[in-house]
Image 1 (cartoon, rainbow, N blue to C red):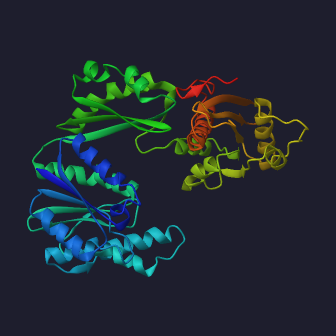
Image 2: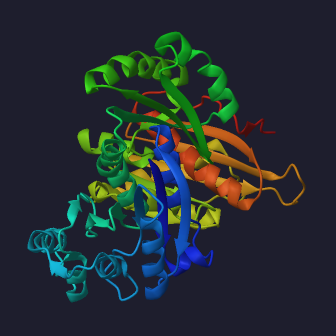
Image 3: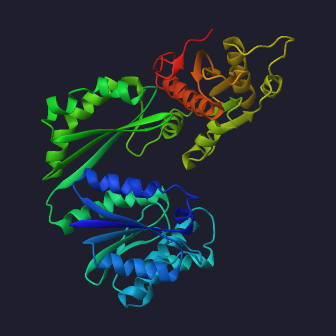
Length: 423
């Protein structure tokens, strides 16, 4: 069965937004043996969308539409789908209640235009969206099954993996179940990971499990894709390989599947009754922002201090400033300890960065990371090569990873592939 992916949105069509949703869907379908025959991008235009839906229905076995399920006037997918299918839009009371509950659980009143997201073509099958307000749905148009997904990447990915892939496999007549296991690592590159995992699939699964990598600096994603006739068969194939991946990649694994590095940090702090304060130079507060974006972090982040000036950081942390203060482990530890005492948090993280003055090819930056709790402190010195943006990304990830390692009792000083010797 040939599948077509149809992405909507002016921002996608004009190139203002990079279409990572398409690449995820096409890659995910290929991993489970489904064939993507065509990809189309259409702007937020009624006539163009209607024409694209009609053309796709005449040439594909199934069509996955991405985008256009939001509450604003330029979100047209439901309306145009109903028009082309020759049915009316109907209010789905259950989904409307879901949206209202979504807002009320966050202490907010549902905006009136969100009602639009509960208007679905008559006869649609709801495709569950457990983490957002956009209602996915499936509908036949001229005998072709259309699946509609939201443009928000994390919502789309969840629906593709849990809802749409099984439906497409069923439509294609492939009587198998699939699973994608993901390991997120920091500190090792794709080549090294490939060497560390050499032969793992052939030796343990006879090639029935597919191993792949996707690099998105500063992290690397290692993927195991497996198919089988039952969940039990999948687990039997995957379990020994998962164990070997964890053993071989070791401390470099920062999270698995949908979990993130910052989620693991917040989870261990919450379970131990801990809290964290951060002090950052050059990173623009990105470390605190990564932690604060999690709902579970509420109340655990005591203070976040950001400055490019070392004297300002020391003053904010309550550390006495000397005449010749330098970026060093002693300074970083003093900052972490001072901030921890002043904020009342159980832990404090200090990340200090100094960029090379020249912009030569081998330029980069020195990163000093310190973590302090009530009784102990650790410092980590590293040098990363690259431009300002590259060093900033690396410093943020390195700081968070050092904090993870400290909290889980892992070696903070373990070298990473991107690191250069410091003078």
